[in-house]
Every structure is written in C-alpha cells, then in structure tokens.
Amino acid sequence: MSDASDGEYDVFLDALADGRGYYYTCSNGHGTVPPRRVCPHCGDRDLERIPLPETGEIRTYSTVNVPTPAFDDDAPYVTAIASFGPIRLTGIVRGTDPTDVEIGTPVAATVEPRETTDERTVTFRPDESTRT
Image 1 (tube, helix red, strand yellow):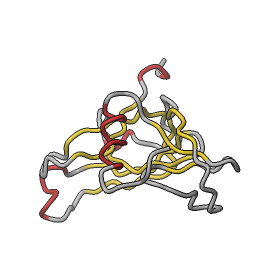
Image 2 (image 1 turned 60 degrees about the horizontal axis):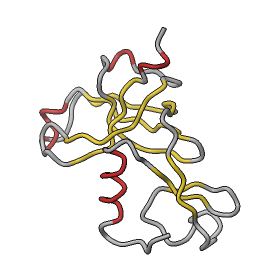
Image 3 (image 1 turned 90 degrees about the vertical axis):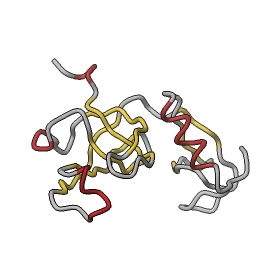
C-alpha cells in the first residue's frame, strides 16, 4: 500500500472516474476510503486495496433546494450517502429527478464536475442494470 499523501484523494477520484474505484480494508475487515495509512476503526496498519463494488445503495439523502450562493447553479440537487460493500461514500445524485431518489435506490459511483464551481465531486447515478 502506498503512503497517504495530499494527492492520494485525487488519485482515488481519478480511479473512480475511470471505473476503477477502490477502498482499503484492514485485516479485521473494516473498510475505509483513501487517503489512509491506518484503519480509523482499529488502528491496523496492514491495509489492502480492494476494488469498489460496481453498485451501491443509497442509505440516506437530503434534497437541497436553497443552496449557498456558491452552489446556485447546482440546485435543486440531492446529496446522498451510499454504501458500497463495507464503506460509505458521500456524493451528489444525478441522472434522475430529485423526487425519485429513495433510500435503497441502487447507484453507480463516478466523478463529475459541480455545475457552479467545476470542482470534481463523487457523483451517484441510478444503476441502469437493476431497472426492469
């Protein structure tokens, strides 16, 4: 495993954007997102890089209708926490009407720019493979 550095989160975002997302797991089975040198749950330093599951599930979300001025062009938007195996990611839900987002919605994670700032952010899109 490489050392955590200021740029490791950018490396994680690059991998996620390319469909090669990953997380770290310790010998006790705890999952964590980089950058990490030790498991934040138990202090284990033996971390292994594991591929991120292709599909996660929304666990909680909030619809933002009145944002701060820095995010005016993004609103309305949904911020969600989705579980992917033993880890949870926070991101913006796109590709669906905000009123259609529900707890349990299957999503895929990628990286896209914010509408207002053009800053990269974790983005969830409904997983089309689970739709009937």
